[in-house]
Structures are given as C-alpha cells and as structure tokens.
Image 1 (cartoon, rainbow, N blue to C red):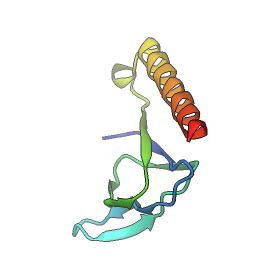
Image 2 (cartoon, rainbow, N blue to C red):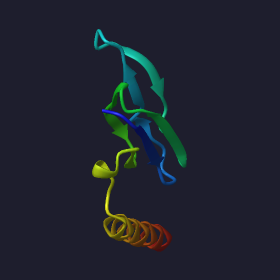
Image 3 (cartoon, rainbow, N blue to C red):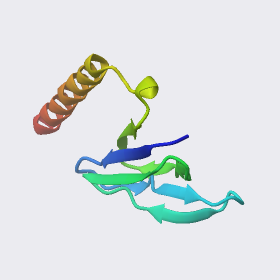
Image 4 (cartoon, rainbow, N blue to C red):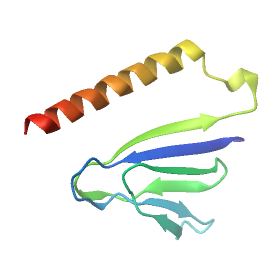
Length: 101
C-alpha cells in the first residue's frame, strides 16, 4: 500500500512497561523498537511491516493515521472532524477523571 502512516502514543502520567512500537524485517524478526513515550509522534512508510509489543503495565492509547496521495482512498473531512471531536471529548473526560482522583 502506498502512503505514510503516523501514530501518536499517549501514555498519561502513569508509569508504563512494554507497549513498544516495533518494525519487523522480511524474516519476521524485530528490526527496530521505539519506546512508547507520552506525546511521541511516529511517522513511517506504510510499506514497513510493523506492530506493537504487549503492554505489561500502564495505559497506551494510539491514533493511527494514514496519509495518501490517492483521492479515491481519501477520507471524507466530516468523518475526520467527527473522529477528532470524539477524541478531544474523551481526552477532556480522562483529564477530569484524573483530577478527581
């Protein structure tokens, strides 16, 4: 598939263990590992095999985004705005719940 992928990892305040983003070579071996860090943006070509290691402790949230040059594979802007609205609402609720603790 063509295009570029981007992933935002958000690990709010709690210590985490595991959950690293991995790139895999053609032999299905881990080639590179990127630790999940709060606020990190990871961009890479969609042609790279990739995955995420199991999370042992803490929370890991990710938003997968795909960029394309093809108009026939593009997402409708209204769908995107709706997704963004729900994400902001969820983030606000998570912050409110954290403050109440």
